[in-house]
Length: 205
Image (cartoon, rainbow, N blue to C red; front, top):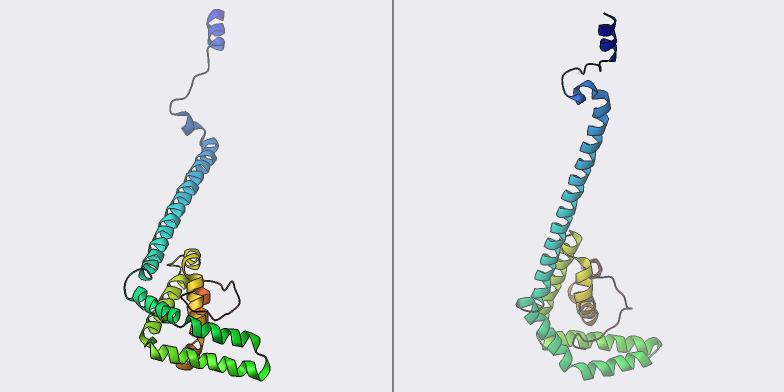
């Protein structure tokens, strides 16, 4: 009897049936919640990264479409005709700009008016009105695309900024005369910040 009692006291404790996590739910629950939370964060980060990458790809593709318009098609043809016209008038424009730089006071105001008339006469002589309008509408469309976040502003600035601002400077007198109350500058500023002071030069130079 004594031996039997001794054997029973030395016997290992019985393990209740069932998995161990069913016996310790309070220990396991916080760990499972933590793991699920980490997995949710990882999945969310992956989804955001994939969406951002896709959006950047779409933005670059749309920007490339606008860049292509200045290489081929109606916009490119219009811009080429404008360039050719001002290249043909380089000598006359250079002479006027040299006079403007040397003049002062009322004389400078007269030379400035002479240059404005020169711009208007050149546009009329070469029939540039339709071509200028094509390029102006291109600027408005591109600015709208950049403002909406559908076009990449950095790419547009690097590829088009200087040329578009120079186009504006060359035709400023025409815009002021023909498009009174319509300012092209906000559209250009949306596409590319102005890095140099305003100046008047032909697009062909």
